[in-house]
Length: 294
Image 1 (cartoon, rainbow, N blue to C red):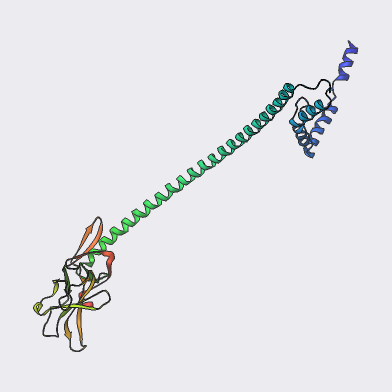
Image 2 (image 1 turned 45 degrees about the horizontal axis):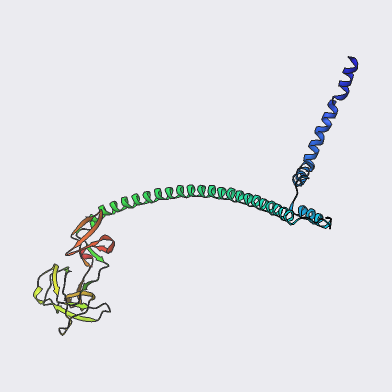
């Protein structure tokens, strides 16, 4: 029994030998030896496998060393050739399947990245929509505040960016002009002048029958040029001169798009100015001032 125990002790590795083995493994990892060994095993060819080149060499040697008196029969040659073809097809199919698997893996990764991008893009759009909504609300609030301020414009003179009227050929045009003070026909010759878009004279309307009138006065132009010929379709500028100032030698003037703000109208929450027969958005106003300012 003592002898058996001694044999067991001799066959069991000592602690020092175990530590030495572990140290060898660590050293192999540090030097990269374990990786090299793994690659070597990976690239080793199975001795039981027969690739195309080896098969062809064996086949040629078989033909070369056959008995001339009893050559290989044709059907055997065809059979072996067919076997070689099948082997090649199997290898090609294997290669193709591996490529398809790699492509599917790559497609899956691309789809995952695309999904992440779409989620990020959706989040950005939601943030943008929130920002737009906030901006729209702020704009509405500013518009409402501006609307209350426009009430203070009632009774003031407004200069707007409207300077003329549109005429359709063969038709007539109705318009109104604002006169700050009563027309006095004894002071010069009060007249309305109609000009084309290039400020060329087209026609005029006499104001002698409006003596003593002021404020918004309505007029109708028959659409004719001086001499009776119909004016073509287009935009025409209209202005009036009245009450000549003897000291300065200048007339008081009035034009389309200028006049007293009579009221403020809210259309779909937006303020509009009513000036005689004209209703214009407040955005068209260029200037406001008191009646006596000019």
